[in-house]
Amino acid sequence: MTAAEALARSGVRFVKMHGLGNDFVVIDRRQQNFEPQSDVIRRMADRHLGIGFDQLLILDPPSRGGDVGFGIYNADGLSAEQCGNGLRCVARLFYETSARRRRDLVLESPAGMIKARVMDDGAVSVDMGEPDFRPEALPFTGVQSSDSYALEAAGREIRFGAVSMGNPHVVIRVDDVADAPVAEIGSVLERHEAFPRRTNVGFMQVASPDRLLLRVFERGCGETRACGTGASAAAAVARLWQQVAASVEVELPGGTLRIDWEGPGHHLWMTGPAERVFEGIISL
Figure 1 (tube, rainbow, N blue to C red):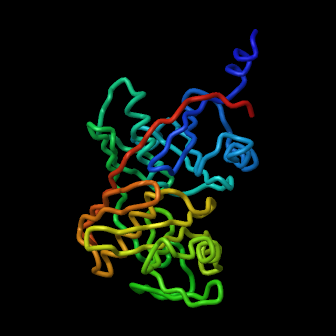
Figure 2 (figure 1 turned 45 degrees about the vertical axis):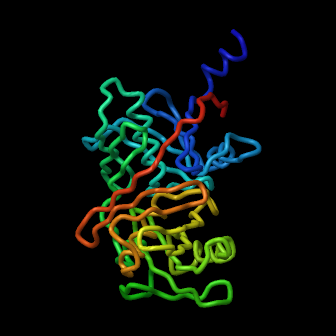
Figure 3 (figure 1 turned 60 degrees about the horizontal axis):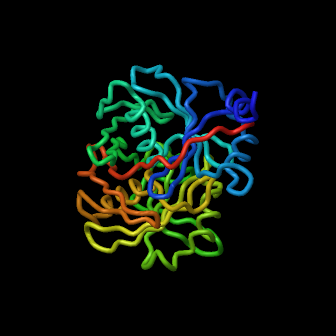
């Protein structure tokens, strides 16, 4: 048996994907065994010593009547509830590897059942559900529900909106995202005691009623090139504040997502690309 054959037998097969540079390793557990352990995930996520990724996605057989189930783990090894760019990658990978080739899918995410649609050009639209502005949905403790809040962070008062898109988000409006203190403020708010499950932190510039600029400090990852739930959260908060239209382009460092949300009582849809980069086998 050659070394390559031995690795193929003992290693774990994976697919590397990304959505606007927010990158993932996808492990299909429907075809092989894999038990996620925090130390193993952290080694895999290391961009020098492992494969490198922002999140790990693990596909499972459906258990709630959907097409495919999946779990999400951040680069720090901890599980997450939702990932917008990851949803698009799961949908496109399932579509491309499924014998039935159905474009309308139902994904079983940790946050619930998610509708997705694979477009002719390979882009994917995802029903992100209705934004939940209740503090307890994040959770965000010690406050009453409001359109905006303020906390002390890094020696200053920070004003922001807060919303759950299946995972927690803080959205801060800034004059210029290029100069936003993403690492300084993001790292403090992410672990602020008011957010017992930690939070994602978005820095949003309103360029026009149909265009937002955004940088996101992701929980458990740091700043990433794109964040689908972060783009959804920013558009939802800006819409709540009556600063954008129902359809808005959200420009992130990795590219642009379209967010469509009519407002309270309606589901929010996110549309953007999902790309396969390469496949491989890793020995654990």
